[in-house]
Image 1 (cartoon, rainbow, N blue to C red):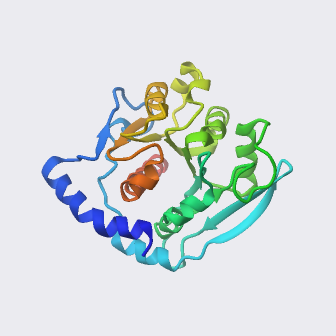
Image 2 (cartoon, one colour):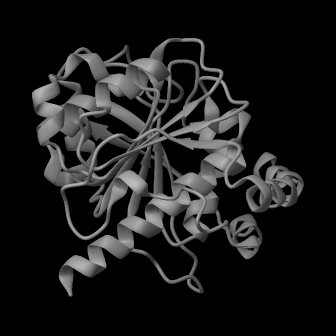
Length: 275
């Protein structure tokens, strides 16, 4: 039994009971302003409106992970990929998983994120950033936003949503500011580099964003993220209790549920705008 399945089995009943009695004891929405894009108000987004389908964990067990490399700006980048199986309707969304300094793409594989979201209909790609894991070379010294853009283009990532924890913010934040049109959604997880972007620039970015932090994050990045990103017009801010900086390790079921509801809301918003 994987960590994710244990979390789903052990935590789901207790969590649902608490939800019924208290509302949402482990999740706190911190938004103070209004959405300006589309028909959906991201500032009142409910990250636990829909629970993860129990069947998705069984489907995930049968999904095989593809491991490969691709040359990006002279760097041989290692990545893991899962796609929805034939019996699952694809959402047409791509979920790109970055990682923090102490982790690699293997982290997402071990906690089941890659296979779970493929079972839920997403194409999922997790990369080892330059200088980490199975990606060769030193840490990248060039334009990191441009590097992510080259990666996204090379792997043809459509309807892209990026999950960006900790150190990976040095890649995702410049990408967000420079190439916002490439993003359908953004999920910062207490990333670095939120203070490298001006408040004026962030206020102009309408990409739907859900910031997920742990209540026990002692790095200072959770507070920095909440303060710096607060000006974004389509932002939901979520704090998960009993979780440290790597919230996805401490509370994987709650983290996955929050991401799942974000992906559902994104898909619904996009569909409403094209009708």
